[in-house]
Image 1 (cartoon, rainbow, N blue to C red):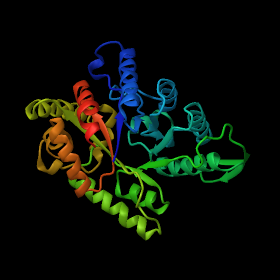
Image 2: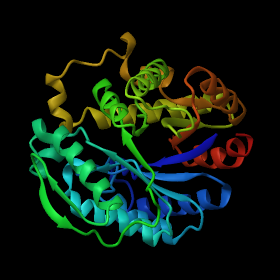
Image 3: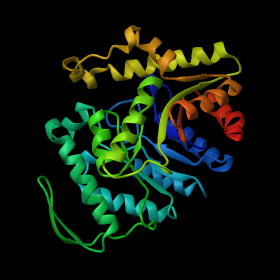
Length: 329
């Protein structure tokens, strides 16, 4: 089983100089390279301290320069916010500069504040995302290409540079049933989100398997990264306390003013629990390193886990993940 890290660039409470957020993350990435992690997956967000990384491609170049074997993943490039030719150029250049180590993950995004600021009508975002993905893949894989769609039109384009990897490994972020259906219909591998409960994760994974088969594809042999928030400590009670703090941070981040549109959406029920408690009980992996190895084994059996993409909720959680859990997986 592969183990990667979903790297957020959080700046909670704006504590400390912002540059320390990046320096700590890069130190962690260097450790990943030396200890056997498969990949770092860089999270792109805009206009929020939840994660202060507006360009995963720029950060990816720096991460590649500090590592030798670690793969550089995007989780995700928010394709609906880019001009697709510019996005294709950045992905290709990153692959060349990293020596062919890019895992390209693309997603539509969900924050209305981002769509509004970049002038992308929310109602067009899904179509723009899908066109952008199609254009990027054509640009990366064909010598020259033309494209005539609803939002973008190009003739006789040659992308330079071309990526080193042929083909480039590609994943689509798929949280909703509709996103899973579209990804499966095109035969894409998917990235699974860190906010689904364990029960939801199993249901989505099975839904993907069925839809892939219906579209004439197989999910066998594919790496399907499942993002999981993780809290590790020397005792179960300490790990639960870390998980609870992380859960509250997540809930507060996702209920802030940048997500005011969610008031008009069907509310999440959180299984009838207080939201942070739901995360602790049903979303976050937490416990001692020994217990975590057992939980990962259980997820392999119950949800078909073959690639764990961890988002450690503390420095100690990452240290224990690298030193105590990774060697046993």
